[in-house]
Image 1 (cartoon, helix red, strand yellow):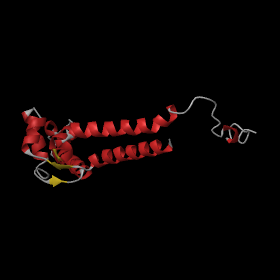
Image 2: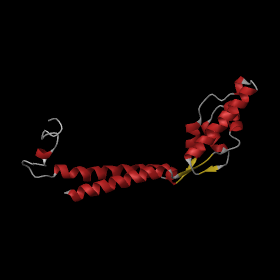
Image 3: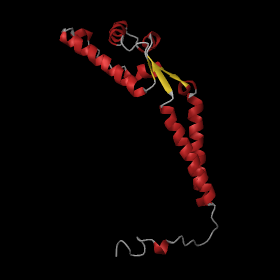
Image 4: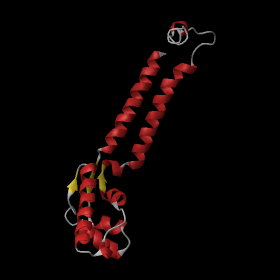
Length: 158
């Protein structure tokens, strides 16, 4: 019975490792198509495109570096516009999430549904294998060393 529990733990760990691997399986590149696809307002589009011209068409392998440079470019643009007191040119809306999603590509983006289903099935199979041992015991009284538990044998309470 312990054999199934160990297999369930191994399957769950594999699912967790695959889930973590999906965080690092994409690349990011901000293109004109991604900007046009995510921002509908033409005036806002011109301001964002002007703010992000330094990181446009630059490839990033890390999500964290991409988001950092994206935020820094918008902050630098807004600071410059505030210095010139052009209040109508400030970018107030937050486009970080939609631009990041539109700029990502790689094996995770190509296989989103299949990765989701594989991870979900691995977690489910691991849980079923782990829990199976609890429900497959023979009927009757089971000692399970409860008598020697500190909480029940007056070890902690007194």
